[in-house]
Image (cartoon, rainbow, N blue to C red; front, side, top):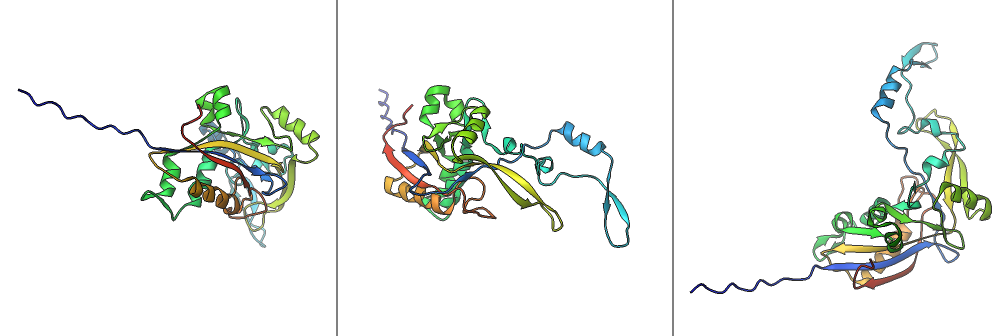
Length: 267
């Protein structure tokens, strides 16, 4: 007679889920300054650059000139320097989401905030980088998960409104008494002899992000997550000029407005 098969124990997957709201208001934080990198050039654009005539560059007191091919400063960004419309390329904007903070920005911020810590014996940095999602449940309800994986919509101004179109951003700039604006500042380009150029950045003085953090296969306490978010707001920050940037300004800091643990994902 065949032996009965032993029952295989199954366990429910482990998740840690937190509902988090961060931002800047009268109680704390600092303005958010966006600076999205210009997209890389396509191969056709690179080939076109190679076919352009060389530019004469003066290379010394003797008056000798050397032929040197023209090259955009930075990564495909040279044409934007001094252009009042530069803000269009610096704004984090996606059709279907509007003005937002990319999920990768949130991931990088939290990952860099826990470099030397662990969660249940696992490096916290690895958990934040590979086994974590940062999504807006409201966006999932409206657009679906595919949009939510791109980023978290930004709410701006004292009334915390979403900006779903470029026209909405422009209107906010003219109506919100500088709470939303195109901020301009002289900045020196790369190189010792580069002349300063006016730069134009989207700036939000009052802003808020609401998202759900989901840890896969890891249990994390609410108190620990609370401390991590508070520390990230002071030491890491978001976007251009944040505290952890190579050239930090007084931008991108935030305060923790609300946090709570959830038993299940809200979608």
